[in-house]
Image (cartoon, rainbow, N blue to C red; front, side, top):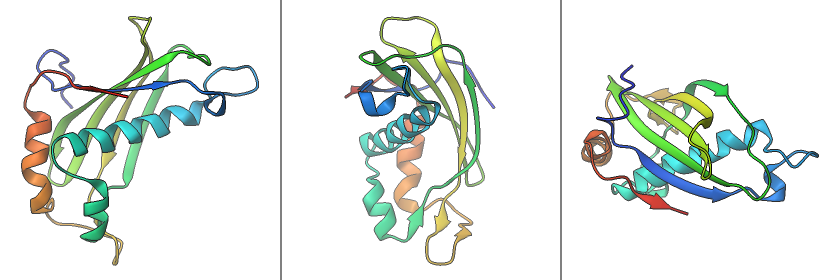
Length: 152
């Protein structure tokens, strides 16, 4: 899977660490990072014209079929977390994402992850043979190097 940050189109999604994101020690609970990564992927798709609710109405879903996380350092309550997401490769119908989560004040990542999604037919629960046409152009736009976009 390609990992070149220089040639990739990285999308940024920011969130402030709230009390509900943390454990009893005010450190981000490990599962919260997964929620943030999903929110960032959904927002990245929305930015290129694919609204997730439209996919659902078409009978398509994009479940995670593989997830690999590496925790490097903790984020704490009050920090600003920046989730950087990149659709690094499309192989058949598999969508390979790289995602890194940083504190806005740090240069080193707190979490790095590789996430693989596939489109499925919601009704039948089966993997689609082709990416839905409504997504094809948007996915190309996510792979084309562009200026990063920030949201929050």
